[in-house]
Image 1 (cartoon, rainbow, N blue to C red):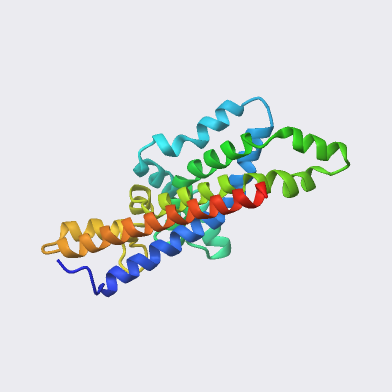
Image 2: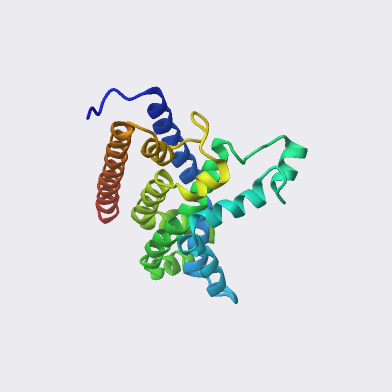
Length: 232
C-alpha cells in the first residue's frame, strides 16, 4: 500500500471536505452561540420542546435529515423553489447543500457544548456588571463571551469534525458527484465499492484520522491558552 501521492479525485475530495466543514461551522456558529445563550439564560414555555427539537439530528437516521432537506430545500421544495425561482439559488446537489447538511447534523453538538460552557460562567459577574450600568449587549460581549471562549472553541472543533465525517445526510441531499459534492467520506465509500480501491480507501482513512487528531490537539491547545489568559 502506498499512502502518497494522492490522486486528483482524492485531493478534490479532501479540499471539498475542508471547505464544507469550514463553512458549516462558520455559518452555524452565530446561531449556535445565540441559541445556547437562550437555552442557558432564559426560561420560557416550550423550552424543553425546543431542546428536544435541537437534538433530533443526533437521534434520527442521517438519511431522514437528508431527505427532509431535499423536501425543503430542493428545487421543488417549500423553500428551495422560492430560492431558485426568485433568486436563482440552487442548494440541492451542490457543495452549498453539503454545507447545509453538515451544519444541520453538527449544530446540536455545537449548541450543547457552548451551552455547557455558558452554564459554567458565574452569573454573579454578569449581575455585578449590570448593577454598574453595563447593558445586556456589553455584558455579553465583555464578560459572558470571553469566559465561554474555551467551550466555544471546543464546540467549533466538534462541529468541524462532525461536518468532516458527515455521510448519510450529505449523500441523500447532494448525491455523490466527483469534484462537486463528493466529500472525503463519500470518496472513501466509493473506493470501497470499486475493484482495487483498497489503497485509495486507506489513504483517505489515514488523512481523515490525521485531520481529526490535529483538530483535537489544536482545540486543546487553544482552550488552555484562553484559560490561562482569562485566569491571568
